[in-house]
Image 1 (cartoon, rainbow, N blue to C red):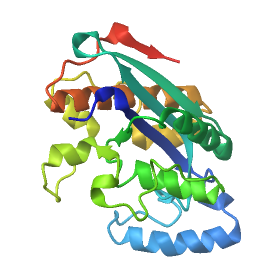
Image 2 (image 1 turned 60 degrees about the horizontal axis):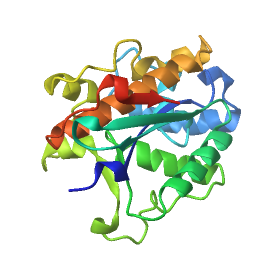
Image 3 (image 1 turned 180 degrees about the vertical axis):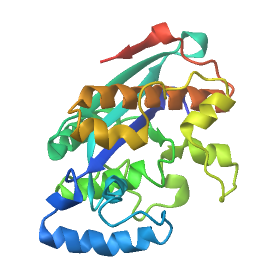
Length: 238
């Protein structure tokens, strides 16, 4: 069993690089149009290239990261505690650099792992792509190039819940409810992040949401391993 103290739980929040389709430079409009044409094949009839621009946040080529929240555990059994730290802001290069510096200081020594919900399909590759775009070095822990499957230290709570099944997607919110874990979805959800960022200019609300997702994911991971969850009083948010 992987030591819980050697796992960093993380979640990212992303938005489109521009607030609306109309603000896209001409070159980017052409590129988004080609991308959107494929997306529209499975969209509602009333959707257009312009109206689905909010989906740009889902693609590392058209979106950007505005928040990375991380959590690590200390202790064992019912005495476990958890520390949460976030990197956030409008300057993506700066927050990615700060995250990489932290990861470099945390990962040396004993073997470490990263864990995210649907992380292998979204968080991990998105992080790596945006690091390359921002001319940041991809940390060894995130880089899978040339590694054998058993050498990749990336965990995914969605993958653990699938038990080998490939066709099903279970949201973190649903999984938390199924396992009797207090849900983190009591304020906003992923579909609202762009609106909160661009219209409300309230990044602190997004950070709070991201941090709660990390806590929920960590509790899910413990539950999947039949371990006592972390008491709310033992969670420290920096």
